[in-house]
Length: 503
Image (tube, rainbow, N blue to C red):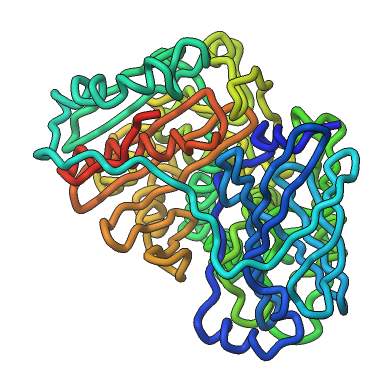
């Protein structure tokens, strides 16, 4: 049995990103029969002498828009995404694909209690009671602002700021954790590492892969091979899925800006090896899911983060190019940019530098292999290669001359610029371009990622001419340490109060 307190052992490609409904949708949902389940629900999961408080956030609106996340409060794990919310009469169920779990049960007549069963191996009873307010995570107060830190002084500043984490926190010797940090500012680079990592260590970058898939899309648009509004159906094998009888259908842009309406993960993802959950999910299974699900675009589809959607985009683009996703990546992006330490498969030399991965509880975790969903999270890379990639994002019109020699390199400047054009709203205070999320307040573009044993954070700010990458050999944990470290570095570079890195 996989116990409930091992939830953070890692079945995510990226950190939780939960869609927010518009005020109009929320108002409409209040008149819908399903609206009685909307709200915050709290219960306790018991297994022998141990117990866990479980908090569920549910919002089901018009046209099937969903917002669902789960908190394991005593593990300090907040925002675990759930999907496939089903409400039929008083029967309610939802899936938590990140941990291969499912809750199903019934809603009481007064709408105040959900009585049911949590299944994650052995079924366990879990009764959820509606709450007036949610239990929120606590965080250490931010560290005071200091004048903007120069690249020459950054390592010394971080040595001080990370002292607690290095002693008995996320980077303590007992954790076997390591991070490699890369920063480029006004054309000057800096790469350094802490803990078990080395400056040239190879990591899985998880969902930062999605930004590469977006660049593949932009490249193929610039080369006239597809259009942003091309239906994805046209890039799948003939007969895979029927054209909707009416209404709009999912386009390549819908997949890239996370407004396709597709679930986070396909319901036919049933891993043979839970430690490598995507290895046996091939194109045949992907097409079988799409055949059943269809490609109709829900009206007013909200932002809904979908590993399935971007994985489908990567497979579709590879189909149109007549080659594998890995080969397409090398031809269109990593080859022209000279990123020789970046790819889906590890070369023998890269394998010698692959740092051992660990789950959120610092237990050993094996690398992941992605097949049909490689475009959502299958890339491995180094800090140096990722800085090359981020420098190209900062200055697409100043790529090295060698990058422009090939036909693919000649379209890269325009393709990279296309990736920064905002297309839709995402979370509050954020918009989304082609897979890059833009922080409306700072003007920074960012994405993060995680696999079973690694996590990553990438961002760049064109206005202030700096970019950074944080690569960790530890998956998402209760502290979201990799994200915090990335945000902290940006805040130090900008001279703003910085999120605390203390344990």
